[in-house]
Amino acid sequence: MKIILLGCGGSGGVPLLGGDDGHGAWGACDPAEPRNRRTRSSIVIQAADGQTILVDAGPDLRAQLLEHGIGRIDAVLLTHAHADHVMGLDELRIINRIMGKALPVYGTAQTLSDVTSRFEYAFRPPTLGFFRPALEAVIVEPGQVVHLAGLDVRLFSQDHKVMETLGLRIGSFGYSTDVVEMPDAGFDALAGVQDWVVGCFQRAPHPVHAHVEKAIDWACRLGAARTVLTHMGPDLDWAWMRQSLPEGVEPGYDGMVLESPQDGA
Ligand SMILES: [Zn+2]
Ligand SMILES: [Zn+2]
Image 1 (cartoon, rainbow, N blue to C red):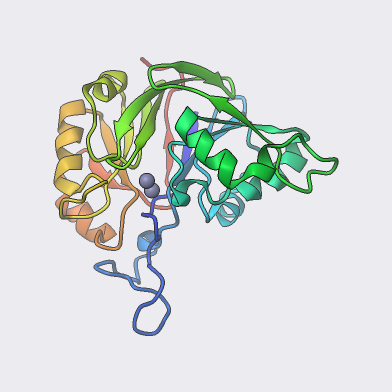
Image 2: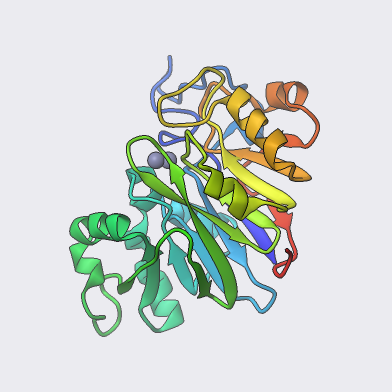
């Protein structure tokens, strides 16, 4: 299967709005490095048969799908209901038209309660022509293995301080965004993965996100061949990370592609 990082930025993206000339506040990031331009964090997972899972639907979703040539989505999985992960749900209306049916949206009871109140109109029965999105809430729980878009997806709980987030594992690939403490059950669920994409917001400790040192510690504990950082803020310059991170740990970038066996351990 193929995994595309649609976006690997923090909640405000990189650059942040503003800056001296209003064209963006880049922080420590070099504006000349294209891999420092980060949209909000989201991935797609494409199975060998072409079925596609979208993980999170942030405010940059439309541009991300166009940029990476994604016109098909079979299932949506939400890690949690923070705005940077759900504000693109309305864009799925056009995917409804392409697919000709409602789209299942998987998440915990809390996540789906939040999004069905914010996007109440999108969770009603479909209209002819899909003039509004047609989404079907499917409640899942950490610890479950759910079968979606032809793939077995193992779900586990992560601590984001202000709420629980869902981590996921498919074959030898793992995805863990928006997490500040990883419970032992999460490490157990991820044991043996080859490729792990994990959220890391900045250099200094942060109340709700892992920082660089913590992400490196986790990477060492898990021992994946390749750990890729995502959900990065403007404090994390791509070239600085390439130089500073230990072997086996690297910064992601928008459009990064990972190939991973979908039936791995
Ligand atoms: Zn986030
Ligand atoms: Zn969050």
